[in-house]
Image (cartoon, rainbow, N blue to C red; front, side):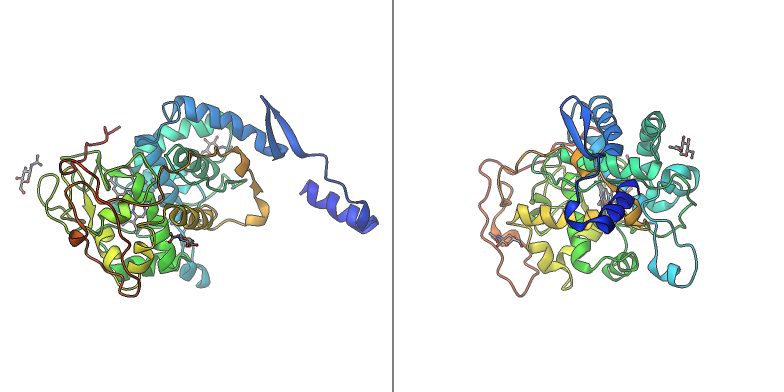
Length: 363
Ligand code: HEM
Ligand SMILES: *[C@@H]1O[C@H](CO)[C@@H](O)[C@H](O)[C@H]1NC(C)=O
Ligand SMILES: *[C@@H]1O[C@H](CO)[C@@H](O)[C@H](O)[C@H]1NC(C)=O
Ligand SMILES: *[C@@H]1O[C@H](CO)[C@@H](O)[C@H](O)[C@H]1NC(C)=O
């Protein structure tokens, strides 16, 4: 607000005499610089999180859960409710933390209570709003994943909100129609739903099959690589745990769990080509994920009232390869090609004995 007023005054007096307002390029100490001085406090939050929350900067369980939480908070938002003058949720407003006793009891939020309670003391300690903290933790966390995105971070969400209603978060047992309708009601196209699901490349489950907590959705849950998009297209052959569960279908690899929703979205004519477009194009996957996450992170917010503090988010390591591979023991014959307009890219197969995936230690 201050810089905005300064800008108006200066441009009114003399357009050519504009100089940058004095709070720009603030020195935050320790050689760190922020475009806006109000962003400096986020460097302290960053250091605390990396050291005391993400185990020194790993892409592990806390990162995965924190990224999931950005979605479960933000998707409590409904354009159709808004147009009818009904409260359909405040979007990325921290309501899942403020009203954890309500929202974490929703079926789709199973397991989210753990990360909410782990994050809460950090948000309180640093005096930042719960809505800001949830999006910040997700952005910092996923920057730790090899080849990861550098997400935008906007600060300044209000700490005052209301509980989101139930049934805004998609379930793995939902149909593609239901998922696209719900996501569309929050403003996302079918392509953007696929873009957001790049998150499942750094993900594992605890609650779909509770007998095998820590079972990942692809063979490389510590890397932000395209393996999730390759492996979800392989023919399913086995259940990794105790048989079939609600929202689960057969996976192609021992130690890997496949959600029914991911299986269906990979094969539906509305989403299959966007899905396939990431199989051999990691940089495309990252760019599209960044754009979709920038939208998700400010759902329900007045963006003009927020400050861009993206410079605080660390620059992730560069991806080792732009192209996914076939897990050892699989061939292109095992791919259930589902995009009918673009040829499936040629992938090389990993050498060695058939890939089996080690579980991620549950938190
Ligand atoms: C189409 C909608 C989606 C469905 C049906 C879905 C479903 C699920 C389910 C069932 C789990 C396993 C939870 C557990 O058992 O512990 C999961 C994990 C996860 N989801 Fe999604 N998801 C969806 C979209 C998203 C989006 C948009 C994001 C983020 C932007 C996301 C990020 C994650 C992450 C990071 C995990 C791993 C959590 C962990 O390892 O602890 N998901 N998802
Ligand atoms: C945000 O609200 C919570 C209560 O829901 C409170 O504990 C916390 O201190 C508040 N934080 C700020 C920055 O106002
Ligand atoms: C595995 O599933 C069977 C039936 O499908 C059930 O009786 C058994 O209790 C399950 N085992 C565990 C460890 O949950
Ligand atoms: C990867 O995607 C980008 C952006 O969509 C596109 O410009 C580029 O041609 C793609 N690369 C390959 C090898 O397909």
